[in-house]
Image (cartoon, rainbow, N blue to C red; front, side):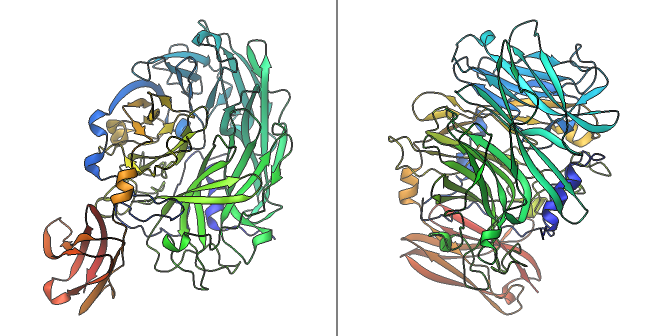
Length: 637
């Protein structure tokens, strides 16, 4: 029997025929989050955590108007690959639905636009790809740039888009449109019938050097309590004249239910640049690991251009993987159980390995009936990178950061168009890489001080990035996650499939954001929304080694007991000598208590707090060691 918890069931609600809303708060309960700039790391790749706000890039960041979409629903899912970059022509492309008031060629707000830049995002023009006919309404588009020959003339490449459509009020079609990138744009398009009640080709468009274009769709049915069908279809296109033909339908199928005891429901795809291998991946529990694990990465590989898919089982159970003891909380049955949940993203590196990214908690037990429950006492909600080899499975992982907030649900007061038709969001984890696969990156949105200001929700996200290089020149560098912005208005962002090389180890990360501050306050869910390019986001893959060498690794425990009326104790451990201090703040930011231990050696230390020194209420204590800080919440009765 395919058991399915509430988290995955929410996905069917999100994409049902009658609802375009997204509720990103998929968990059965809101998970606690540690409010800190992360300093933990996995020994498989020591990581100094997120750079402090004074090292952010916001001074160099600006918003450049790129276009306008008919409404927010074009940007609903981060799994869509809306943004793409072609290094040979320096062409940046953003695919979205059109606002008819902005684009005179658009016949309805389902028209599909290719917004383009040839100067690294400094200015933008557009081509109307599919103007709409008022009958077949296209939705949720994603796009690609086809330049297998590596031509340098932008007018010599083919641009394309895929996505679902509905006719007569019912979801029943998938669209495929493409054409030579010239004016006037002479498009070729086709509509295929969906293979089930809702099958959308909106997952991870990819172009490979052997001449193929890939797009995924999910074809699933449920009976109200569990999935009864969950097939992932691979659509594969090829060059046909001056457009891309996807034949008569999908080329291959992944059955996600048969090998799984639990299946979360979100999935994506990634391909090697040369097309030699591709992956489909999600999270769940394989039947083979029932009673031996929790929600692990679940991965299929294809080496025949998406026709057949092989499930990876060798080395794919991550329970007690070396290094997890420094990242996770021990389970009730004495294990370190990674519990992956929520969004997934990935890219393929130069070695052909899948670089997998997802949210992760500590699992509470190996018991198959409860293995999806987070461990008690785990106040972290982490972003992990897992390296997966197609033959040997999981070979290592990187702890990247602790999330600073949890998802904004559609029913939240902070949702876009808050109310009956509110639209929520999660951290929108997305990946990018260099064309050669030697450098790869992950970008997400998160809200510092969320617990204090926004009930812990990701209400005002800033952009964060982490990058890693397997280039021989940089492989010894251990890079930090960097907070790139501080303004807190980067909603519904999209990241390009490839980064822009700026010379040496420096790369520009192409990102767009949707909805400006005025629209966030005044729009309904059906009002047009502004798309801006976030200019100035760069990352240097050669930075971080000095910080990694000199940075203090600090572990700070929750004060015990909490809440407290007498004495409460805070445990702190350091891996090297540092100046150690503690400060306590009230809810309006006033410092009410402080103590300095001075320079101390590596080891464990205790801070004791007496409730008599405080009035009853909520406080935040900050432990500082060297340049690192960790902040936690405490309650005095």
